[in-house]
Length: 252
Image (tube, rainbow, N blue to C red; front, side, top):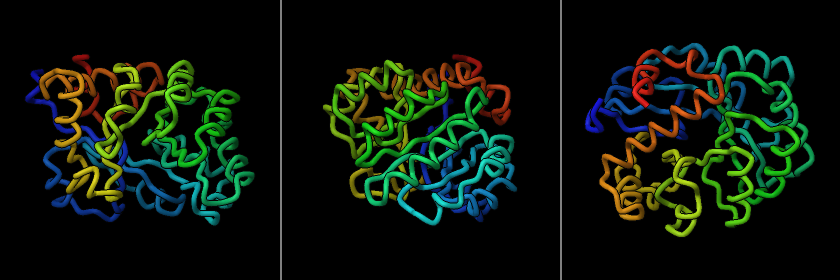
């Protein structure tokens, strides 16, 4: 498959679980990892069967009521129903201890399971990396990770991937190993800085990365898919992927 045939890829965006078929069709064929913020929202998303949208099971760490709703049985069901567990993680806005308890429970249940994890770490980068040291996972993706260079090196050594967007600095983007980069928009957050008009709109990000890497945009898009293919194989997720995405990754 030529790079021009590869659709846009967005490994962390927020899409309402009642989105319509025509609305998905308007996303230009983009492959979207759609994060949910709560088990209740994920329950609606789990009923869907979309060819280009992978719906996550989320428990946003900045919302105490969501963090307290996490149960072992709920996570077990989620691991069977979802390929992506996200958005999960740690956040500086609320008490750390309940978040750590919830994240430990999630990671404990997900250990050795064929899953991708999209992890939030705003203001809690060290604590998140410490947690992943205790409970590593082969499918860990650090979403919009704003850690130091040393923390990025540590995360890479732990096997983490990084979903990045156009709101991040060139310096930080340059610190991340090229073979661990994945694209995201975090739509609808920070649309002014990410310049993402819709989920999957990674045009500006790809232009930034092309300039940073001194490569054509087509090579950047190939890089995203190559990295995702490696990650899905490593995490054992490939057989669970929607057929259309599995076919796209088969060439990498």
